[in-house]
Length: 503
Image (cartoon, rainbow, N blue to C red):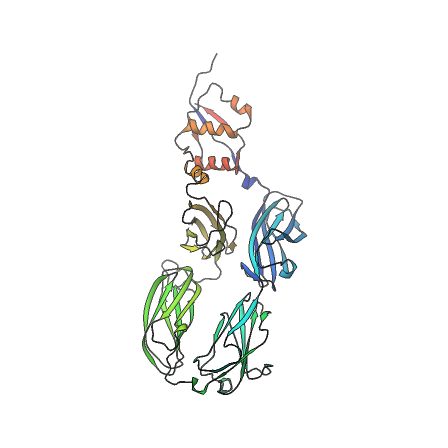
C-alpha cells in the first residue's frame, strides 16, 4: 500500500565547509626587509626575509615547508627545504632570514615567492631592480652658477634614502657638508649656521651622492664626483624664494601640517598656501608674513582619512617656482567618534591585488572598505592596493574597475597585523563569467528548484530512498540558502547527511 503523502521538512543539511575540515591552511606569505618592514620593491643589493603563517585544526606529525622563488620569466631561481614545525593544533609560522637577493636575482622585474606547507601552497609577488644613481645638476665642470638657492639633483632607484656630500676636496677628507634625504634632490642651505659651510665664489666644490638601504648600507653611489663653482653675484639680498619643505600628518589627529620656508632675501606677506588630498582641495590658508630664513607650519584639519597622495602649493611670484609645489604620500589618522584625540599604537592593514579573471593586474582600480572605518584606495601600476590604519572589526571590501563587474570580500580584522593576499579577480562586463554570475538562481522562495539542485550534490542513493513516495514541502536552514548553494557549487562545502521530519 502506497504511503500517504504528507508534509515533510527536509532539515537541510549538515554543512561541512572544506575550509574548516581542511587540516591545514596557509594564512599568509610575505616578503620583508632586514628590519621586518613589509615592502613590494627591493634592490638586488639587499637581504630579505621570507615568512609564512599557517593554521592547523587537526593533529599532524609535522608541517614541512618548501620556499621557492621564480623570476618574471617563470624560471625557478631559488629553492629551500628543511624548515618544519610540529603539527599541533593552532597557529604556526616559519621563515627564512637575511637571504641575499643576489642568490636568486637574474634581471630587474617581478618575482614570485611560492611557499608549500605539506601539500598546500600560497604565493605572493614582489619586484627587484638594480640600484642606479646618476648626478644631473650641477653638471660636472659647471662654472659660475647663479642659483639661489642651489638645488642638487640626481636620478636614482633602488635606495630607501640618499646621503649627499659637498666638499672643496675631491677626496672628501674632513668633508665640508653632508646630509641625508629621501628625495632625489637637495636644497643647499642659503645661510648655514656654520660659516665654513657657506659656499664662496671662486672655489671649486665637489659633490657626490650615495644611495642607502633601510639599514644604512650603501647600495649605490656616484662613480666619480662632479665639480662646480658659484658666481659672487649669486647671493642677492632681494631674491624671492618661498619653498614647501614638507607635508606630514599630525600624529593621533586628523590634521595635516605644511611647512613653508622663506629662502629668499626679504620678508614676504599674504602668501596663499593650498592643500590637496587625493586630488581634492582640503583648503587654502594665508601666511600673513614670513621673514627671510623663517619657517611657518600651516595646519589643515581634514575628514579625508587613511593613505592619501598629498599636494601642497604656494601661489607666489617666485624667482624660483619649482619648489612652490610638493607632492608626498601620507597617512591621515582616523578619529574615534566623540573624542578629540585618537591614541594609535599599532593598526592593522589589508593588502592584496586586483586583477582580471585571467590574471592580468588592474592598475587604478578602486578598493573601498566599510566596517569599523570606511574609505577607499586605488591600486598601483602593478594592481596592488594597501589599506592601512584599520581598527579591529569586520570589513566589507569591494573592488571596482571601469568595464568590469565589482567583486566583494569580507575580512575579519581581529589583530593589529597585516592581512595579506586579499585578492580580487574581476570579470569583464558582458563576459560569460559575468553573465553566469548575473544569472545565478535565487533559491530563497523555490523549494522545488532548490531540491532539484541539491540532488546533484547528494551522491548516496540510500538518501534518495528515504524520500520515496513523499513530496518536499519546505526546506529550512539556519544559513542563507543561496550562500549554501554557492558553496556547494564552488566546492567549499559538502553534504554530510540529511534528516526527515514527518508531521
